[in-house]
Image (cartoon, one colour):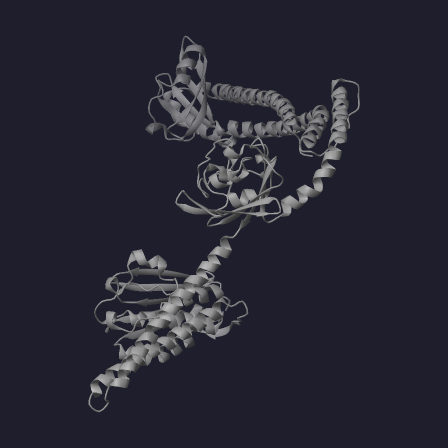
Length: 640
């Protein structure tokens, strides 16, 4: 069980307090160590300086400068990093272990020199220009105060002090780390011991608040925590006894209502929701109207707001929770036809938020059934018995997909009928005219009508072939087994297959395949459908002298196949619809010149492309600009 906030408050409080005390002690110790090390270094330097001063006392004059310099080098050689300097009373350097005294400046202004002349000894810490490092200086006067001869100065870099200090500090911090770890363990133990009973009581109370009445507190003792635990257990027993009977009665009904795919809403006579299942919340997109009501919002409004669980709407007013006016009328306890419609008419139409909603009703054995059909839901309300109902029941069924499918089929039949009727009418008219013409007397007219028949019969053949392809792509039984193909060979075959059409239209086609995109595991039938339709479209809408390029290359884990042309292009406002069935771009806004006089397509090519690409689990993208051309890119998962 993860500890709660009270545990962390106890733990952090104890740990922080003890850690602050321990860290403060460590910092004080570290600061004192630095003082001790500097004091010890000063003491050692003074001792060495006094020894050197006694040795050089009889030679402390300018005539013995060379001897003093030799002494400085000899002493420094015995003690690494020790620097010895002999300075005269006027600040002239007679000897130095690390520099040429003749090139050194006067030292009369050095702090340690001044203090040594005045008091007998002096010290200072500063940056040395000669050795280029931070240095500790100690100076001892040679001679008495009344007749000083000069100063013996010894120095040593403070980095040695820092090194010793750092080593000791690391040791202190290690000890401190062990202490902090022990502090944390101690704080953890105390927090666990003190917070465990409270945590158990809190967890039990939280479990009970979620409706789990099997939880009990296991706390011993006769203190305040024990009394609280026993009181909580007694409350649990009373609640369990009261709710057991109610839960048994509601279980079956609740299970059935919640598992229904249809939405169910029951409203009481007071206009408040008595029952609503998750399906109703989902179908009606009921938002947080109890907090921020929008009773006049249309279906789908405020879609960005989070939906409430079904239980959260129980007891809410239908005016606040239900944003659909017609549905509110159904759920009200009064008769929704009392506002003016004739109950015997059987039909009522009302406009709401730009949508048409039709209400129908009928009588069946004393049960009044209402239904409202909108663009995406079907509603039904039932009232049992005579007079005002005690409650209203509404059942909702989502018919979005059914309506869309019916409309799609209706549009498809209408478009297909229109597209088939147009060439048939032209063929029929040409045949009737030919029957009245004399082939010998009017050979030019006969040839013209024969060409009309040929052109429209070709269009019929193309249209039927495209319809068959589209039907096969949409069929659930259709199988398009993939196989390993060579994309390079596929492009060569494509160029060969369209060579005659390209020559007749004065166009060139080039195909390029990247080496890593050559092997492709895909259905050759689907890929052929895609490329044939894209190349055929490119030929139709590219003027003589234009170019068509087909390229294949890897794009991450996919293969991108692009068909680009230098044709007339597609206006931007029509590009979102070019993949619809039978939709054709207006020629006055796209094709021009020779491209505008070419054979009209069936309007199914790009729709076939979209379905074939979807069958290959790929995607299709289109880029086009009027006067510059069109690029269609098909991306297929690479499984080569």
